[in-house]
Length: 212
Image 1 (cartoon, rainbow, N blue to C red):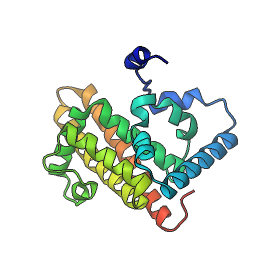
Image 2: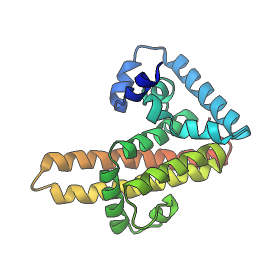
Image 3: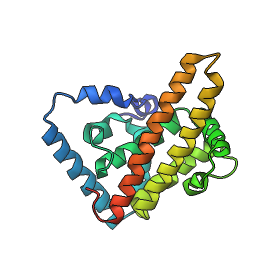
């Protein structure tokens, strides 16, 4: 590919629901086998020799290649599995990169209304603007490949809980005047709550050496 072609290349980004349909015709057992094998091989290989260049390529993978390449491997894996956890981490990264301003708004709203330590666990500064959240998810993903994997999962789970709480609170504001927007925010909150539960459960399984 020429330098000019590379400059104008834009990665394909598609929602998980669409990607699930793309691969629905394949043998589920084979898809599961490939998902687990690739996730285990990738994580083991990188964590054994975590060179800066390789880690940075994995952190920025979806920026360069889009989400489809990862979806082919991991999108249909249950949340409480290694490939499922990795898939959800990349979806969180994609959510932030696609609209960092909105995510920053939801995070700050969630920090205000959620009476827990989740904002501290996530590790975002105060206040957390768009740039800070882009940097935060990059740091969490680096922790997946170079640090304590369970801690990285717990930080991502906490982040999801904070943003989800912000989405729920903002949905209440729009409920009377913009019901469609309120419904979309409520759906996002529910999705983030599910991700948070899956990621937290995956962290517990990892600590018991039972995340496969």
